[in-house]
Length: 225
Image (cartoon, rainbow, N blue to C red; front, side, top):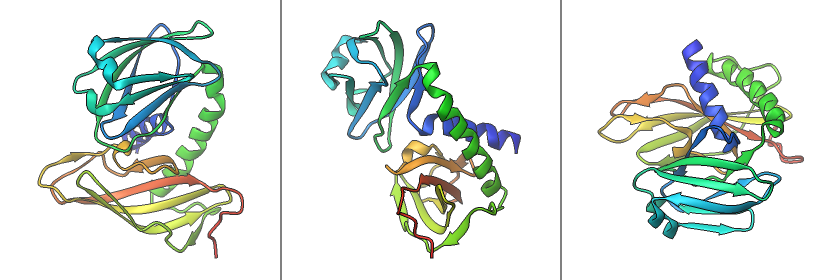
């Protein structure tokens, strides 16, 4: 369980697409090869960007407080330095891989306190589901989402649970290819997800496993019967 929760913690830290600014360290980001990925700095504006190699700028656009990256132009890691209006400097190493684009938000350490509390709550909830135990504040409802299919992964929803705050969907995931697939939330991420966790780290040829997605319930949106 310890290894599984370490794996889960890594997933949750990146699932939101939020990263903590640290001008003393190189921050590593991964963007989707498909479509365009937006990078922004919360509560600040991006003033200047410098990239290496310089020809990657063909796939980079800056507009007000956002950087837009086209992942298909990133075949090898690129290095970028951004400078904000408030004088913050951040070095980035950016790679790309297949998956759905999702916005990336860079935050100051002070702004991440609320996020950490939410992550702790989600870890506790998902620990229960990973142990095949449904928390008492969750009720089973009709399955809302049917399936997700991307990159050789076929995910079929089998159960949905709701509390007053979260909706958890349990999926059976299957590798439909003839090679082992390393599982990563970004490959099957949905726009409404705030966390995704796989029971296993990889799927062998035609193997199956389970996956859980977590979504916040908006006011008046509950599907509970």
